[in-house]
Length: 168
Ligand SMILES: [Zn+2]
Image (cartoon, rainbow, N blue to C red; front, side, top):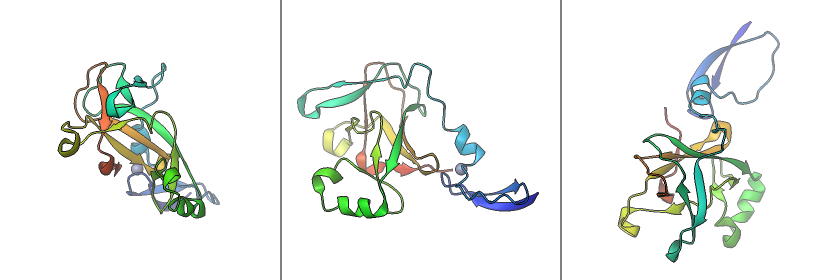
């Protein structure tokens, strides 16, 4: 066995792990704690409903079940474009608008309902967002998490300027 130090791509913490001698796998290793905090998708799917909200909001995402503060509302896997493709999209505003800025100058396509959550920010819409978007670099996903208790039927919104990387 040999010891090696890896930096978890999700939380940025370096961990010393034991390798079988001769192991050369260089794939990024997500630490146990980060895997633990990626709660499994519920058997019935993420408990949200995307639907027509109306007014200037168009479509949106509402809670099917209630959420407690800190609950994961939905995990959306992301699919990165190559660096070259990501750079090209910057000159295509129509397309770029629907891509999500990622790490290392990458842009990603977001799965699930990820693009349908509406924006809220007190100064702009007069409403506080009830969720936040957490970037999970290590598992190639974004997660929407409840910032407070959310009732069934409530619309789930977040402040688009406040996506943040997972912190320790
Ligand atoms: Zn980690």
